[in-house]
Every structure is written in C-alpha cells, then in structure tokens.
Length: 441
Image 1: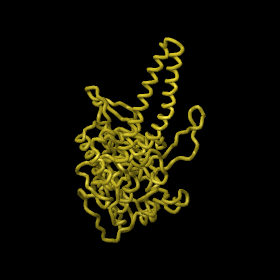
Image 2: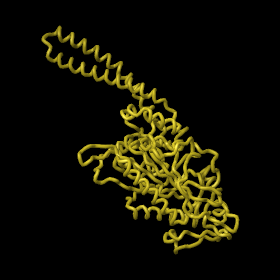
Image 3: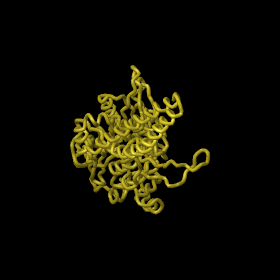
Image 4: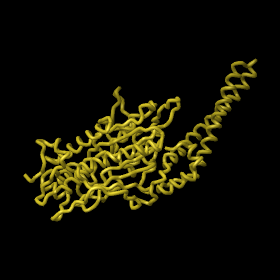
C-alpha cells in the first residue's frame, strides 16, 4: 500500500504503473474519493470540536435558560454527527477498497511488458544436458523407480495429489536440509513458522488482491472448520493455509518498531506450502510441476528504507539461489520480470528457471521480489533511526529452494539410459549411507 500523499504528488507516475501492471483501477476515482474522505473527516472533526466547546459552556452556564439553549445546540450537533459519521465510514470503506489496488511504481530497469512473454532473460548458466538417448520425463522415471505414486495420490488427495515414496522422500528431505543449511551458512536465522494463519498476514503481504479473501481470485485455501479461542468461545477469525512461508515470516515483524542498527534482519523459513492453483486450472495437469502442496525454504529480509541497499540485498538473495543451482549441477537461467507479470506491490523481481530435459523446457524454481515499503505499510513494520525518526522498512523475499521443481530437474538432468538417477554430490551427505544413485529395485 502506498502513502496517499505520495499518490497525490506522483499521480502521473502511479497512473503509468497501473497501466503497465494491467491493474483495473481508475486513479481519478480514487483521488476524488480521497477528497470526499478528507472533507467528511474534517466535518466530523469540526462537529466534535463544536460539541466539546458546547459541553464546556453548558458546565459554566449562568442559568437554566442558557443551559437549555446550549443543550439544544449540542443535540443538533449530535444529530449531525450521527448522520455524517456513517457517511464517512461508507466513504472510507470505498476509499480503502481502491487504495489496496494501487501498485508500487516499478524500478527504472524493470522491462515494460503485457504478460510473462515480456520477461527478459538476463543470462543462462550451465550447459544444457545432452543425452545419447531420448530423455524420459520425471513422471516416467519416478513411476519406474517407485519413488512417486501419482495414481494413489490422486485417489486419496484428488486432482494434483501425489505420494513421495522411498528414495523420492529421502531426496526431497535432502534438498530441504541442504537449502536450510546453506541459508544458515549465509547468515539467515532459521525459522519453522506457522502455516495456519490469520487473514491479516495474507492481506499484509499482498496475497489477497483486495481487502478480503476472494475464493475466485486468491490462490489460497481457507479453512472451513470452526475454531475455538482460549476461553472456549467460537473464534470469529478466519484462518488460511499459507502458499509460502513469506506471509508468516513477514507477519512476525508486524506492529514492531525495530532498531535501525539491527537492520538488515535476515530470516529463512522451512514450511509446507498449499496452493489452490485457482488461476491455473488445466495447466500442467500431470506430474509434479504444478501441485497443491509441497515444501519450501524461503528467504525474507527486513531492510532500511534505502533503494540501493535493498537492491544489493535482492541481488545477494538471488545469488544464493543461483549458487545452489550450480552446486546441484542444474543448468538455469535468470529472468527479470516485466511489469505485466508483476503483482501490484512489487518494485523489482527476478525468477530463476532450471532446464528440465524430459519436459524439454525451462521451469521456474524460484522468485525474488523487492516490495519497498508496500508490504510494511500494510503490516506496520517500522524501524527507528539513530536520530529517533520512525520509518517504514523495506521488505524483500526470495525462494531459496522449493521441493518439487528442483526434484523434477534433478530426475530429468541426472537420468541414465537404464532409468537410474545419479544423486547430486552435495545431497549425498543427507542420503542414507551416502547413497549415490537411485536404481530400479
């Protein structure tokens, strides 16, 4: 969310961002609603001031006649307030619904594009795997090696369900332990955050497109089961499952005033992730590429409100993910995300994609985003400077490593002609007995 003063002073730049990010918002309507909001608020403040003055005069009235006249004036002011305050609340609600749609103005180096076709390849690293045989897909390999069961996963879990089995289970846990250890080595504090969370964390981090959850557009699962508070009363709070550890990690700092000297604060979260894939029905129907649940190690950084520092931190975060791709032996490319493929709050974003030879395409394995203070304003994350000033922090996040897509890339890139899989060397320390290869049983 942007500061309304900033929006007023930079209306043309904001309008350009709205257009380039394909957001349906009439900024003129928002600014007109803002004028009505300010006028209504000023009227309320004026009437409350009149009310206070009249209350003081009533206390010091010389006689009953004067007191009755003042009381009558006070009653008239109360009646006006009773009319104006609900009108203000209606205006404020309409204003808030428009405000949450206002995007961050993207960085000057962000490509302009209508959709993901406008994303720009920064570079490729690693040699594309070449085989003396026709490479199999991860689906064929996994089923032959008995390490993933898609049929029973679908039976038990439904569409996009799967069971990881045997060495498949071990390989995914090795990936997660490798990623978690890498993050700790790089100075990120490890956290296992809650994955069942309140709506404010999802709104604050931008996972609700509007002010509230919308099942038709938000890629989130809402929990329908009735919950209880500590005193046994029914909870009125809606609960949701996270699609990434990011909302939980960001919300950890909500309503805090941090010490500038302790910034940047770097944390990483390991969690299961749940995604409804509501907008991707019909895409990648088979296999692991697009599933409803998986694991992930996520990076989050709380930075000072300095674009140069935040940009350097973002590059560092992406660099760690690149390092892991190289150590895993996965060919990958780095993409800079264009305006039309960015969510409203993002200032600057990059994706990493690994080469998946069985699928014969690049596949996204991570995304790094700098939101500036857009999320911090929603979550009220501030810090105090050495001079005593309070500022909203800049918030950044990056996928350190997810479980399923790197698994696809490993199975497909390290397959042998006989259908066996060579395990990347960096993962073997977490495999039983230092296992080097997955073979048919």
